[in-house]
Picture 1: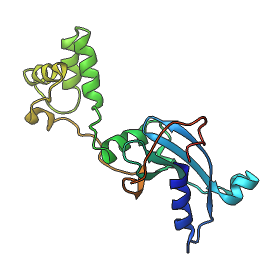
Picture 2: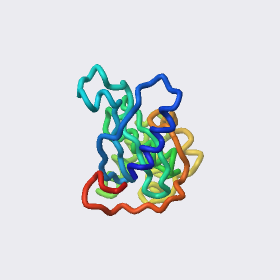
Picture 3: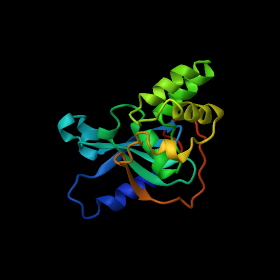
Length: 183
């Protein structure tokens, strides 16, 4: 997988004003492999002044081999970029925080508290609507659209991931002795 990133770096370096980048490591990740790169000079000197600001690891997707870069400033809260990746790249729906809390309360037998949480969610659901929402979420079904549309919606900005290549046609295998051995 490292060779996918190395090929991208060679192409990207042609005619660019930015310093040439080199692979400095890799690790397995739930989404595929994270490949860490630095400017060649920074890799040699290890001086922070030689680093590129904002450049994060590349992700080689485990499902299709596509290549994307994670922007470092979007990684501050740990899972933000992963949630964006799952939602925007793979099309997976991430559960809303409210739904997770409602499901937790309902499963603990605290439906009244779950209804109160729904009513506090700035959606203006009345005392009759909130239990309908709770019932749907607790059963694992989608809440009625007219109720869900009145609740705060998830942030749809897509800031953390830059795509560089679609699905890789090369075979991918994720075995190997070490993190950097799957070339």
